[in-house]
Image (tube, rainbow, N blue to C red):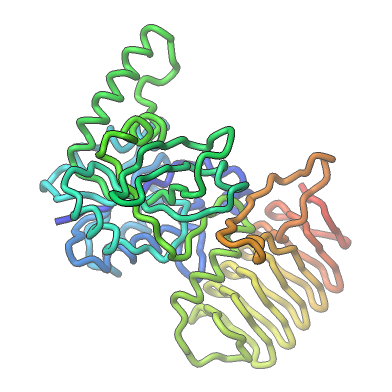
Amino acid sequence: MLKAVILIGGPQKGTRFRPLSLDIPKPLFPIAGLPLIQHHIAACAELEECKEILIIGSYTTTLMTQFVSDMQKEYHIIVRYLQEFTPLGTGGGLYHFRDQIRAGNPTAFFLLNGDVCADFPLAELYSFHEERPQALVTIMGTEATRQQSVHYGCMVHDTNTKAVTHYVEKPNSYVSTLINCGVYVCSLNVFHTMAEAFQRKQDSFYSNGQSNPGYMSWEQDVIAPLAGTNKLYALQVRNWWSQVKTAGSAIYANRHYLELRSREEPSPCKVLQHVFVHPSAVVDSTAVIGPNVSIGAGVTVKAGVRIKESIVLNNATIHEHALVMYSVVGQEASVGEWSRVEGTPSDPDPNKPFAKMDNKPLFNSDGRLNPSITILGAGVIVPAETILLNSIVLPHKHLTRSFKHEIIL
């Protein structure tokens, strides 16, 4: 029997995802028509041996209850949400709920970061882990460019045994192009290692006066010390993988998830490949949608509209002949007729093998807004014949003119 644990953090995290996370918790933000962590749950539920999925985070239980109930009904698997009442870090939450993870004596458990998107090869990862009985943790790894690797956990591993000999989280200088994907298989004995790390934290709490003795980093306090002990292994995969740190990375992930789950369905309008339209959305037959568009529940798309490379959230309205490209349109937002809402894609460099998303900050060194996708917060109203280019509009704004390269507060 196997279990899975999904770490989702809390509302104080994911600040780069604002303003989208102001209305929807980031783990529940819809990508390709499904909440972000539903893709994780679907991958875990495909494994017959996986009997329970635990979601750990510091969002309030009320925000997660309905989602957890829906997941249990849809996938016929036990799904539970465990709330941290104070942020405990990626390792602290795991250690705090160790009894719930160990209950039923699973052979091993998967550990998945909630902000990664991938074609999760969980069966392959588990088989690899099982072949190495001495392994406490097996990491799913992937190749990155030399320049980008320093923004991730970097690993050096033995090419024959696949044992990780060196691990550094976000190093200051180049270590390796093999990076940590935030997807693991762990043996239950890892909790003995965590207990030792926790004890070290307790000791330093009283000597150094640290603020939270229960706070523990999985990567720095557990994974890094395991490197070089023949208990930490890495499986390098070629499957698609990306993080979702910014709204731009959500558009990129949306494209890939739509492609992975593509299926031909009758459509009310002209559709270019890889589009998700919720059954309750009303789309005019003269609209042209795609490629790579997700349209949520209750959305209205009127005559002559053109949408590409975008996510339109629930109950939004796109009026006649409007154009929406490389944008996220918030819940209950309205785009007026003949308006143009357009952003700039922030995809990885197609000319560099293994390139990942850059996840640039909002502002560049000159203090100007970096070109990015356009975001309309919930309830934003864009009037007719307006141009909105590379801009971010906070929720419930009624625009009166065109904007470009601005944040509208």
